[in-house]
Image: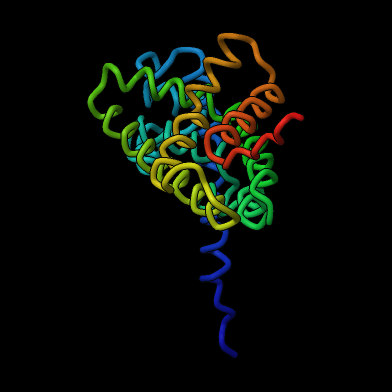
Length: 218
């Protein structure tokens, strides 16, 4: 009688353990980045907080800045989803048949994402001003965000005319929906997430959608 093969079972166990280790590292990093910023956080401190060896952190992520970007990614999309536009919330924006409904769903989703991502995004943004490696990674993430906003502009244009060319529409969405604008409105001025979403919807509608003619007064 041939022995039962355990390779697939062991592989699944290793993957599950690796996922738990990554999660512990990210949880530890979130606490430390929030308290001490990027410069005040070390790989050793992250490892100590997570209860693993520093080599484990390097093996899992490669560098400190990649720990931070993985942390941001984990707040943008759930495990197994490789792009933020593949989430159900984003797909609902794509599938909505009315442009105004698309903007309403998009604004609500972006405001919620901004709330989750802003603290770590701000750590990355401020560190980019001082550290060349972080600056390169920050530019990479902003470029990727522009690709996603270009996709959103395409979804909006597929449902009706826009006031500007698709590329310009993507640029406008990229700016208005940025975490930095969310920081200024919510963290500096004290707006709520709902107020942020409402402003985002109205601003994009005013700048991207054709104006409805005002009936002449008699």
